[in-house]
Length: 95
Image (cartoon, rainbow, N blue to C red):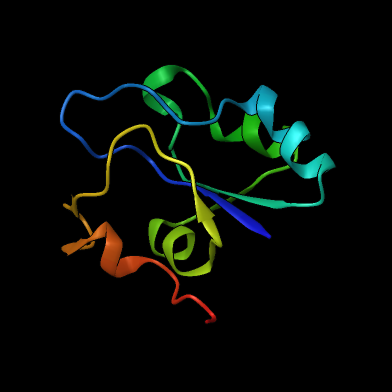
């Protein structure tokens, strides 16, 4: 399963749903982790730290289109850069 960690887009939000130290726990369970570029920057978690921990750094659209599950702090909302609601960006369920 692919786990997606997008950058939080709510105004003023500085948290990230998963810190680099949690990545090995997720990958040890056999999951691939996709982290949006700069997802943790506002909380001092750098892309290099995620990569070192075993995550793959990708663009926003790829997180939404490939992830089987999305981990976020805030609820889904309209994405300011992709100009669509996050729910509309999610991968289609196979059932």
